[in-house]
Structure formats: structure tokens, C-alpha cells
Length: 440
Image (tube, rainbow, N blue to C red):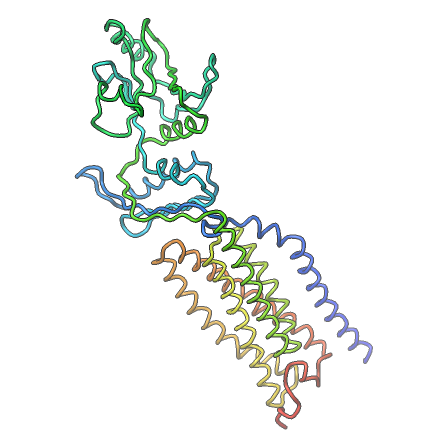
């Protein structure tokens, strides 16, 4: 019978070490990859943030949720031109849109691309409108290179070749040198051909002479000063189309890459110090139970990173603060359980009875505390701005994960040792002196 009991002890302890070894190997192999895959906010990697107020473009227009959603879609189409990974564009309140572009270095170009509308038209020397944006194929603009000069150009496509033939014949009716067709890229209203042609920053990007009928759907926009980057941006603006509203900049903020990197380093260092202090406290005060807490908290941090990465969420400085706060919440759950177990041991109960009773008594307290925190985080997410929302998402994620690790995981690991009976009559390992135990 004694050998059988010893076998049971060894079996439970072996399961404990198998579980710990599995998670230790999993964390060692994958934690770096998951941490590196998490998208960082602009406060951690630098970037550009702007808050727009949405106003109608005419009196008949009403700013409602549908219009704001359409505007967000138009802005995202423009952001695609920048090649920004994980942009954050969201509606705030009833008439505002916040745009966060992490990793953007050319902030002026980003600002212009977000709010600028490029209206392309073809005109004659008397400023008569020959073709406008409705005559071009939607999404038909693309950056390219001139076949002969190899200079950067923008290629656009017309809907109807016959229409191009008609307007080219109209231009040919003018005597040289007035037989030109101006490709007009309009960013503002009011300027005429005569006023514009003499400007150094002319909106007429090209004014070729027309000496024959042009029956084609392909048009080139070329300029002596075009760069590859400019043609890419111009094609992107033309393809994005017009914004359905007017965007007025209310607030903007930029974070340099070096400042964001320094903030990241400081936040990570502070996080390591905070977690290390928590681990040290748990080990010194709760002895053997503290070892269980350190193991489950390590698994908890790993799971939070995995879940956060799976959600494609963006990690910000407030998010790191929420992660550290989540560690504190998880530790609080352990402390409540361990204190209940110590109270039961002091009352004179056996190790197994104290473990079962303490775990059962602590669950309702932990549940109440976490539910109230989730409710508060939900309010922050609903009413807060992007930074506050990032904090709320990380906090909610941390609390939910802590139920799996800090509550049930810790009880599982500690239960394996308690049920093995190897800890019987060793209350000191739980931080309870024999003099504190009441006689039943």
C-alpha cells in the first residue's frame, strides 16, 4: 500500500514537471516571434497622427454614420498609396475622424495625400473644359515610364476613344501655337488657363500640341520635374477619387522614430523591472505558492502576447501600461487565493482541506473584482480616444487571459503538489508558522 501511495505521488509530480517543461519550451521558442509580430503604435515606432473634423461640402449633405464610413473608406484608399502597414483610421464622436500612420517619415506628404483632391481635366487654350474626371476609367491611373525618354509618367485611361477623337479635332481648329490640349491637374478653384500657364508651379502638367486626330483611350501625364515617387502619389490620388466631405484639420501630432524607439526601450525596461519586483515579492512572501505564481504569470504574459498578436491589435505605450497592470491584477488573484489557503491552514485544517476551501472561497471575490474592472475598461473603450482605447483593449485581454492562467492554471499546478501529499505537515512552505496554527 505504501508503494502504491508513493507511485501516486510520483505520478502527480511528474505531470507537474511535464506541464512546466512544455510551456517553458513553448515560451523559449515562440515568445520572441510573437513579440516582434505585434504591430506598434506611432508612440513606439514614430509616425504621424491627425484628427479631422468632417464638414459637408454642400447644404443638402448631412454628416451621419454612413457618410463618415464612406469617408473612412476614401481615406484608407489614399493611405494605400503611402504603403503604410496597419494604419489606424477610426470615427470619433459624431463628426470627427482620427488617422494614425505609424512609421511614416514624410509627414507633409502624408498630410497632403489624406486631404488633397486632384481633379484631372483636359482644356483648350480658351479654358473650355473638354474632358473631366467622369470621362476617365475609375482606378485607371498608374505610374509608368515614357517609352522613348524613360522619364516617370502617369498613365490614365479614357472610357471612349471616339470622345478623345472629337476633342482633339476641336483643338486642331485653333491656329498654332494655340492648338494645344492642356492636361490640367486642379487642386484649387478659380484659376484660368491664361493665369496658370505663366506660373512656375503651374497646375498644367502637360500641354502638347495637337496636329492630328487622336482616337485612343491612353493618355500620358508627363512633366520635366516628375519623380517616380510623385507619379506614384499622383496615380494614387487620382484612383482614390474625390472625398465625399471636407476635412478640416483640428489636431495633429508627430513622433520621431528615435523618440518612439526610446519610449519603447524605457517602457520595456520599466515592464521588466515591475514584473521582476512582483516575482521577487511572491517568492519571498508566499514561498512555495509563490513559485506557482511565477510560473503561471510567465505563461500569462506569453498568452497575452499571443492573443494580442492574433487580434492584430496595435500596441501603444498605454497598452504596455495595461499589460503591466494586468500582471498586477493576475497577481492579485493569486494573493487572494493564497491568503485564503493560509487562513485555512492557521485554523488547523489539513493541507488538502485548506487548499480546497481556500480556492473555493476566493473565487467569488476574484470574479467580482475582475468583472468590475472589465466594465470600467469597456466604458473607457467606448468613450475614449485611440490611446485610451488601446489601454482598454489590452486591459480586457489581460483580465480574460488571467482567468485561465492566474486562477485555474495556478490552482492546477498547486493542486498537483497538494494532492500528492508530499507537502503534508509542511506549512512553512506556504508561509505559515506552526505557532500560528490553531489547535482543533
